[in-house]
Figure 1 (tube, one colour):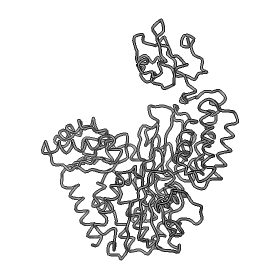
Figure 2 (cartoon, one colour):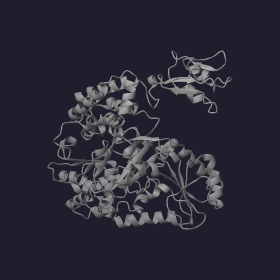
Figure 3 (cartoon, one colour):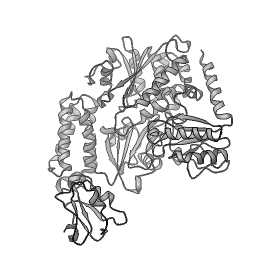
Figure 4 (cartoon, helix red, strand yellow):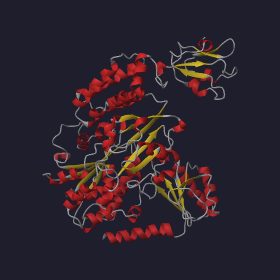
Length: 630
């Protein structure tokens, strides 16, 4: 079947969906949506529509990425803009169906806003303010189409890039990718066009195309959302590059912890095969390609390219010495083009819109958009896609809504567990590969964790290093033992056993580990420690010299007291929840904490009624009022 015929059929189906005057209800059903109860909302909508005999179409989409607003429901109705309803629960559904679908009341009490400007038709519904700062290229279909219906993807321009590429010579495709300035979105930022050109020229057959979807960074979920919400975009990018390389076998390497992504990928592959867009003789071009989903067991090290390929081969996931690079000798020692999910998803945009369009977005050295998983102490947790060069402040404040609870911003961790922690003075730093690296952080695969005044930067560094220590494959001595020694020093510091020489020892160890490690995990593992020492050295000194944690986080450096002037005499909340029976009642009926029994769990602080606020968390060396201490 010719692509024109496929496209016309898909467009007709889409137009029938959007233009027949029937309301369309889009409900996100990605993993994060489901965790918030989205499937129950879907079921309630279907039941309510049937009960009231209301004609409307319910579409199970992927995630828009507004995680703190999920379940998110988007309702399209003739003469109205698409309205987003946030945190929808099953008991809200009857009101939405009866009020909006039947009576034209948009239920503004539930509305978050609209994803597009209204057409002037009453009522006025504000556009989401974050929309003006975002440019959604890779996330353009996420939360809008049914990821299991290939017709939706095709109707919105999907696979037109493939049809165009099949009319091009391989070297023309390579040149377009080179001119676009696309750099790998997996973290290293190596020019994709240059890697593609080298793989094209490499000797040896067969050649392989591999998608690295092994997303293991704490707090990162960009790749997962794309795979669950728009899997065809990744497939199309893989097919285009496979055609350029005359590769006939591709793998998508993901983890078993992503069952929904795996399920939707497999469905997407079967749907593409069914239309002749994948498999034998793609679109009658004579080119054939088979793509297989390979599930790893969740080892973080298998996100490293050579370890990933060893895993596919059935070997232990160990990085190997390079050269040779994977473009010359990768999977089964054959030339292999390995890219990240977001890199492959960028290819259709470049081919369809042209390299000049893509290169016109971003900065001189970092083209296109950056997709971040914004997490931590920020109001609007979720996915963000902005042009390269957008500042950290714009992402955190304008899109993220600022620090949660109005607290003071302290730092932001970019680049995953091996990234760097940047303080407030770097909020105007542009988000691009080079600017973040110069500041001591890195782009990474796209994790961004915001920290506030209640975060201890020493403990944060310990947390990230603990992760990399546990995930090290153990092949390199410096990574295996050096990071463990750094972690041991940090654990001493947060327990109040640190020594003045520990800071310089951490710096020396960090530099040695970077130099002596084979792969990117070891080379970047010291980054959280190095950057927190560089920008938050006073916190290390407070822990070591004063034996106190300024943020009152490190358990061994804090103590809990009860203020007798505020303690409500008849309240027993703290006594009941104390697991070590450290809280007793004084003769005058206020409560007292026995510091020799207290295990610093903080339960008493959590349950103390806010109107009394009697529990005090202090550093043990702080001046405590005599009556409290007694």
